[in-house]
Length: 338
Image (cartoon, rainbow, N blue to C red; front, side):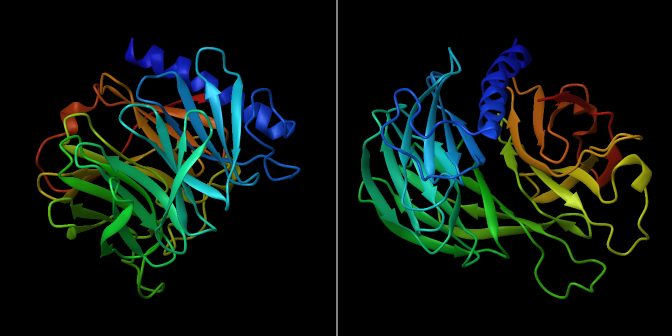
């Protein structure tokens, strides 16, 4: 049932993306106001409200937050924003959604009615958002300053800022709210170093400091998705494997670089394994965004370069989740076309 529910919810998003590509009217039924006049729609991040009734979508090109009714798949509102939006996150009571206004340096708190209740000044380029709801904290990844800010929601003030590695784009909070898991999009240092790779940073939400920096496999780049298992034991990071030190290959099959999900052990603070998403005759092409089913058995991967959703059966491969040295293996990941 967990898989079926995610497929049904995914259908709402698929329908939205299809309509977005055709160019919606900028005065959709029930819209709060006109979105930025643009020929294109660019849904960047999505989040379901905790009560499951609404899907919030950041429309990067139209500079708007779009609300979608999950039961009908209809757009119920568009809220104009000050800058191009990126990450979105809902409050625990589903009454408000927080959206990063990336080009304005702010996070907007938007009520279900469409009213913007307040804005938080957080930095030049806020991108990914995650809520530690029990702590009343909003975690904000700022890709321009290579930092992660912690905002106290009661005061609306930033109370801490942690330095990470390079261009943090996405962030997730563990279920017990002890850690923020941060995806650094790009490697730092010498690009000619064959061991150079992007990393995942772990920030303690007790001290608001980085407690671990975990390298992904060499030549890992474009870390554009992070998720945490329901038990808080594992984190998953979606990324490319650039193969920068190897000859170009597999062009005839539609892929050159490899595409992967790395599994992080949050107890040992080490990379446990890396799963290659590519199939023998088709590349997975730019994984961007992860979601775990409610029963924890399935990891969904948005494969943006081929317009498909990949489904990784975590329950089937739990045999690999044992303490050992980091592994690199390939699974036959099923894919669903949008």
